[in-house]
Length: 319
Ligand SMILES: C[S@@+](CC[C@H](N)C(=O)[O-])C[C@H]1O[C@@H](n2cnc3c(N)ncnc32)[C@H](O)[C@@H]1O
Image 1 (tube, protein in one colour):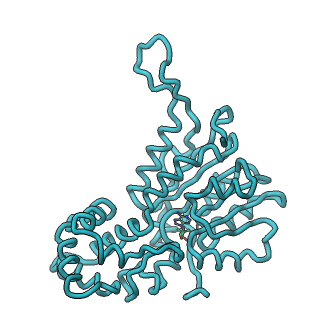
Image 2: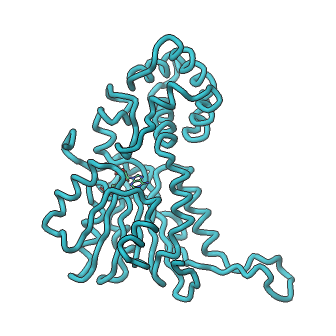
Image 3: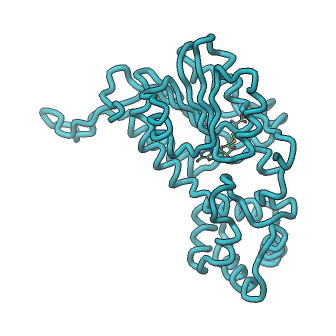
């Protein structure tokens, strides 16, 4: 049962669909289905034999998308899944390779705007922050059990928060008196540490850092990038929208590495590294939303879309 109306404005939907759907009768995976905004655009570019497989780890997103696409069930299959397991998922469906995979990372507006999910510092809610409600570790477990060093690492590495150390100390001190249970409890601590400085940016960084830690977002993205290329057909495309610099950096470097041929030092008579380029990069610079999109949807402002195409001769195949 949804806690709220499922609302989310898809970001960079036009460029994403135009670039991803190169074969109108192909099979495409949307690994972050959310409310289905991008999938709807992919479907609109497909002919009747084209198909989308959409999944999301959030139970509410899956329910909302099943409802949205109930009249198109012959063209889109919707499942509750983590994109990290895409290889097993496709193998279980007897699918070898697909024409395109798309990931729109981060949170949906529904998740942010539903206080019970605990993602927002603007509303009172439990310290939850699980994207997948069937997993057990929540933000409360981290806040109330992590060591000072672990908390500092999370806030500094994932939130790039300068006050990571004093914030970690303040959290430990506060939880010695009483367990921290709500977003309001956490915001109160942040306000006490920040004092006269603007508090909103610090709250945003702390909540973002915790969310990344709760959901293991960077590790899951890294593992997915490590397994995804063999799943693409020759000329198949992978498009990813990132909203966080750490994610975008990982995607940029991975794409560059995939696109690089021989890395032998210049002057060697012949190649000894055997390095093969697997893809061509379609977005030399990331595609970013233009002003009218940001005005209509401020949450789009940090989005960066990058896309690669698998080279027709690439030897990478599913094992
Ligand atoms: C920005 S929203 C996607 C919105 C979607 N493109 C749309 O148009 O409605 C990101 C979605 O990705 C999901 N998500 C994040 N990490 C995931 C993962 N590892 N596996 C599956 N879904 C994930 C979140 O639950 C969220 O619903």
